[in-house]
Length: 294
Image 1: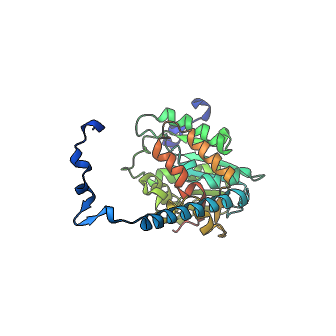
Image 2: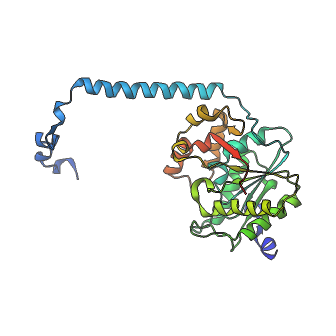
């Protein structure tokens, strides 16, 4: 267990310009493609396109109003335990993927949420910055700083091309589950949500623990289900598709703002495509939990 002692980092240590256009470009010939004349498109066609876009926008706005105004502030979900350990691979996983679950659990009375992050996210050499960003994000989500375990371990690099040693990951998880008397364990499923090898490695490690009975019998394990590519980017619409399922955690409008604020704490990562992700990813609105498949 030398790697355990060596890798643990205490939280308190991390406090062409228009005039150049050829006139031929704007000629009528440009508007003709293989015999099809765009000028032949009637206003009737344009009206139907406009009507479709208008109705689609109206429906989306109506549904978003229903979502923002009617969904309850707390989802019951599957987790009934009082001491919950969520295991992630990198800083920002907590809000990009597990946000709905975390915000619902931290609002419940008597539920103590802990987070294990197995790397600093040092792929681009900014591990120290990302470590501090993780702490700020967790505070926004309602996880106390004393409940955060962050690791810097040469055996567990932030690298999408590296498969982490399942025995190292399994040992770290099992030790913390027992030492902190956790009754619930949550991490990625076998597809890793985004397909990242580090995510998948955590899932495999938990499966090792379960198959070898190395976790306390009182500890229940859950995995965040990887959604299909269609459902992954449906945004808040996934709430209407799956909200009646008993194994989901849903973000209210207020919760989603919290998740968005938490993601903004990861300033080094909060570039344009991640801003779009927070808006359109279904994982920021709803989490589906399943039992790991051994």
